[in-house]
Length: 271
Ligand code: KIV
Image (cartoon, rainbow, N blue to C red; front, side, top):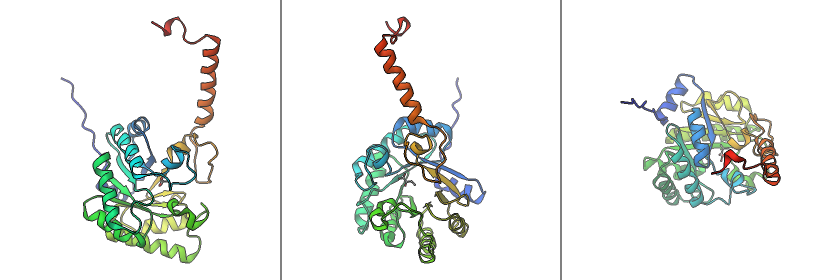
């Protein structure tokens, strides 16, 4: 009889314990079954079905065009590939801002139709009603402060946020507010490292940084950036572990050559 090893799923409580024990949390984006399976098997703690799918998967310039139906499609594909990681899904632009009832409906659709475990929303006090209403339905919420790409037309650029005191103070009070109303973690995007560390130390819930320095409780990157599939995107905070765009291109060119020369398929590659 084979003994199946029980897989212990990552929960929001485990993430909380990791923060208390000083263990760093790893998070990456995933938008499909195959990548989710690889990243989950590698041991990632959180998989984010980010609305960056709008850029990376669909080729849009911003995250604004992606729809709730499209996010649910990506999220359900990811959930099918995962055994262990906590799957968090972005509520896309226009599905929660300014309307807490709509926010709850959007979150419930994600949870019911994809099987994901939590949602992420961008913003602080201005989305407080939406966050509270979603939490009241028992859906875990991750916050997102600093550079919030859904507000790109308000900021005008993707440059570092909260360098000035006023914006830094607003970020600090937003972080405390999100913690107080019940968020289980907060993403801090593209802010000075000193601020990332200060906010992380002031909170008892974990912070996950992207371009927020080494003082946050965890790190997140867009998987396609880390693997070098998005060739032109090279912000300072990004560490590329592979150059997959070039590697895939070289190998596809090799395949094309083999097809054209008649080398593929050979006698062992046919019936
Ligand atoms: O959509 C996304 O990929 C994100 C991460 C950059 C945090 O929100």
